[in-house]
Length: 395
Ligand code: PMP
Figure 1 (tube, helix red, strand yellow):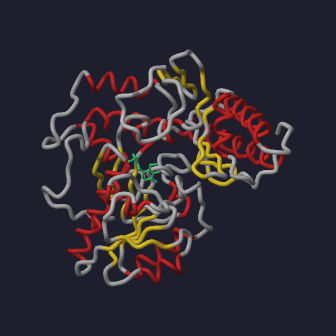
Figure 2 (cartoon, helix red, strand yellow):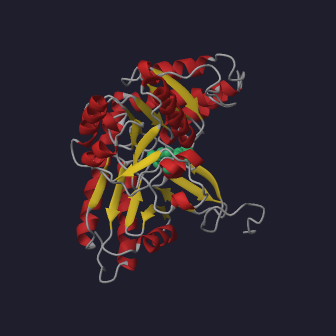
């Protein structure tokens, strides 16, 4: 391969160039095939190149790409209706990335704070949380060291430990406008809070008169089971952001809010591609598939098979168990060997991800089959047997 000498260095990538995908499979330029349980970082909800998205793109691209955000377009109106019909939120604003959706949530909270809470602007977020790579969303993110990369960090964020409602209660003051959390921390290492966390946060924020904003960029769109992860807790947030799965692989994200919170005035928020019909048409196609009852039932069964298999593997190889829900799962290693396990899987034609040195994350397409799950479990088990000292058997 020619070295990618005209690209800025922003990350380390394995050799090879990916050229084609289909369902759970990805091919590189050399014709090598990979079983993909990363799926564009939990993005391709329906797998690689699904016919639904191909058809939506073909149909919409022949009609209208972008009339400008200054005009209405039909797919955007319909997608906003379809999403708000599935949750307790009333209005949507569309963006291209999850970071932009969260940036919009931060702006909305600040404007709401000016209007409704005497100029409150601060947002309580969590250590280990991840909200994006714009300057504001980096400041909201709780990744260790991130506030020192591009100083000065944007002010207005206060961090508390994830899962600790008491710490949020202490952090809320006169200047607090909102609390922003992920229902399950994804990049932070698939951290599932104790039962009742979201419900307690909902009660607390309602009592103290601040907004509860949920970042469902990773957990939303069926990834953890229900269409939105917070629906498992039976709560209603004031604001929710979506990304990744909503576009099934194309750049689409959304900011949704309750009517009482929607305080943007003309000119406050926008963007050249905000709500463009090409991406909105894809969002509609993805949502339609995700809501198909037969699809939902099949996907939940396969997710249970994956969790059970991972659990078995964990015991066979002396790992520390699994965590996560639905198709957002992680295997906890007893040693900081996840980089080596990812490499050993890659060499065997399998793609998994290591958000932490001792954690293997799996986030397959929601269309993954039972047989593909079994293939991945075998491949992962072989990789663990190679990498982990003392582990020689297959799970
Ligand atoms: N929020 C969460 C919870 C995420 O996992 C991510 C991406 N990993 C983002 C926001 C940022 O989304 P994007 O990369 O589309 O800007």
